[in-house]
Image 1 (cartoon, rainbow, N blue to C red):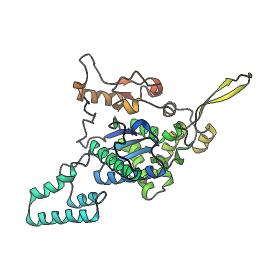
Image 2: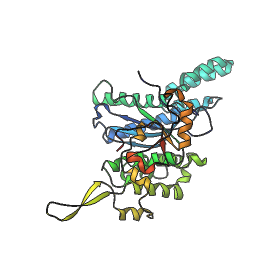
Image 3: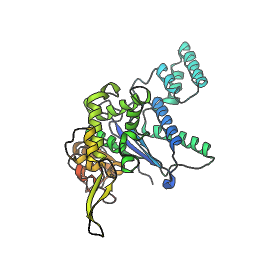
Length: 359
């Protein structure tokens, strides 16, 4: 029996941002996505954003899986206006269909049929501002397109998507950097800016307008939401861009060690592909190998299976709000990070006490 998905208890409140790290993998983990598939997925992702009112603040599309750091703002208690509803519908529906809905709303307004107006809105708004509906719509639309173009049938995704609640502030910016460094950890690029299908690659390669502006706005939100800054690309230039670049370049450092080969010579062995420290220094002033960087170079299972990630206070609050999920012997929620995530222990905590596959 499937357990209910972890959802932020404050998701219907304007009190604090709601971020989720979402992951889904292709069935059998096959390498199914080339350039065309990644471009289509990104286009559908942006369409789903516009329709649902959710926001992708960071993402990375790999060959057999993807990562999204998704913000899910609450629906206003007053709902949305007819104008906004039609604008959102135009993101995923045809012009003719939107015109038909507009006509229905206009007729109902003219006749004062408030119940009819509410029914029209509810046909669509239940799919907005909702984690499950965002992911369902995105995955279903991509699967339909993929199966049609590949001449195949059946499911494409391995299982239902994973999601982890992420606290704003340090946890959110760490998760964003972890996501953008996926292609570096995989040895696909040395500089995360060189990978087209990621939030940072799009922010740099797309420039200050269009898609580049959208990606920059998302990263600004990931790094500054805890300070009340919205998804505004105007904040990207200078401070935010430099801070994030420094995080990424530290995380992209190549890791190596010196060993003695069979001939007795001392040689360097690469443990993790990446850029040299000299290259990193050319991109940003070097302050040493930060604890965060040591973590970002490795796969961190807590970031996909930890359920709730954040400060000790944040995780314990989530524990108290969902006490029924745990046995009577458990006294608190925050669990110390170990293994690959140990360098961040004391700064980030997990609600799940993972023992296997943590490095």
